[in-house]
Length: 300
Image 1 (cartoon, rainbow, N blue to C red):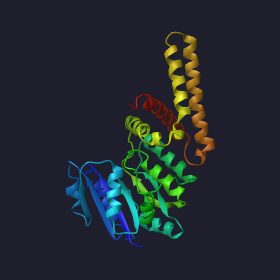
Image 2: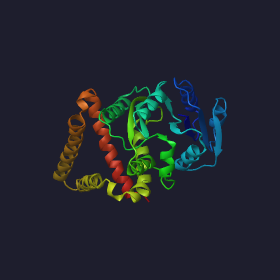
Image 3: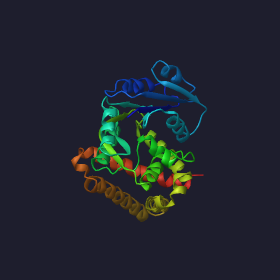
Image 4: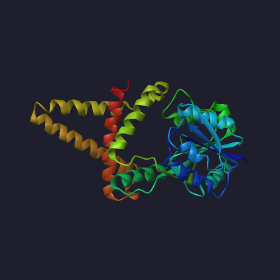
């Protein structure tokens, strides 16, 4: 099989050297690496030009369009998309190819946080550990080229969760998506603190409400929106009555406790991490639920 790796980057001068060096160091070598510079204004294009890659420069566009340009120009019959802000284990590509040989039509790799050091980062790394412990693939980042042709590739009207949308269309055509659990991608672009995490969550959820949820309205997180709306209303009323304030504190506590129990017991977090990281992850999930609700009310 001929393998094409596609990297799309916009202003990634801090990360792109690490990314391309890790792809260049793969045990299994691809036939080509296509580097698409999405109208960078920093040194990204200049840095990429030092590597043995096929360079394509495009006008600023949404990532779905850039990905479609990449796979349509690729010569390989296996197309792997690589994040510009990630570092890839040297066996990443060979593990992906092993999974294709086991009957996959599309493959998702195993993502980890790059060198987690702080409490926040280690708590989010637990989320990755939990996610992949019993993972049922719903999207992919490596494909047989004929699968992309049959599905039409990424929906260029979406700029968030476009991978999930493509996964749905892949499964609808009865193609198989499998996890390559030993194909490790270390993502340098994960949020490094709570502020970044909440800001990114807000932006991504707003984009989903503008695009993805319009296409799949049945997936709108209505329960979270209702729960947070009730919490917010109780909070406002608590300014006028101390008893209502106590109700607010109790509601908030039990809401957090429910998240903690879900992570610990249902998702079997106890087997994956120390208690303090589960406590942290539960708080971050609670904060994200609030952001999801806010993004719904401020989506326009």
